Image (cartoon, rainbow, N blue to C red):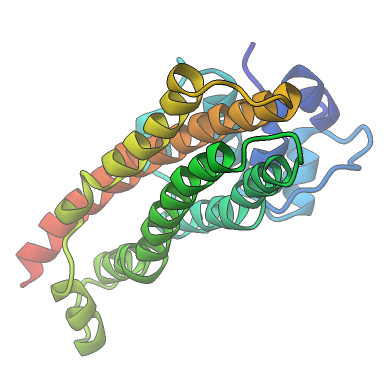
Length: 242
């Protein structure tokens, strides 16, 4: 069932509670009473079309309106992706890390065994964090600069410097390594390590890793299928300007 503008926002959450973090990334908090999607978007100055495309993309894995999303201004997409990054760094990664630490401090567990899990996770966390910081400091400023150049039809000295320092083509394979690292961690925990005595905590960690993987997959799809083609097309326009 497709989410529409006239649905009550509360019904959207009832239909799929996994949309709570997606809605929050638009700056929308719970407690919206019986207000509709369009009413909430108007109150919070959220682009209704972008919101509907995103929540439906997360709600239905087979739904991906690439052309519609590519029509959204890059600055809006970047703002959403930055909120997603903040969620990963400040919430999701920390939550998993806290559970691993709790497992490590359980007296009945094999400390060396839990340390192995922790070391693998630390490696993944560091790689994902590095990837996110690269996007925040290099890729996103480049994206916004390219859009600004295309809108203005001229290239300022400052924008020329940013434009010359990077190309979106360098970014195309960036997600693969991060995704493989997470899959390696899950595979080790599921297939090759004997579960600890605290199986409830262990299973919770694995569940959160799967949820993070799914969220990252949607995140990467927005970047690879929407932002990348937009930038490649804009780079061609800028080449003609030069």
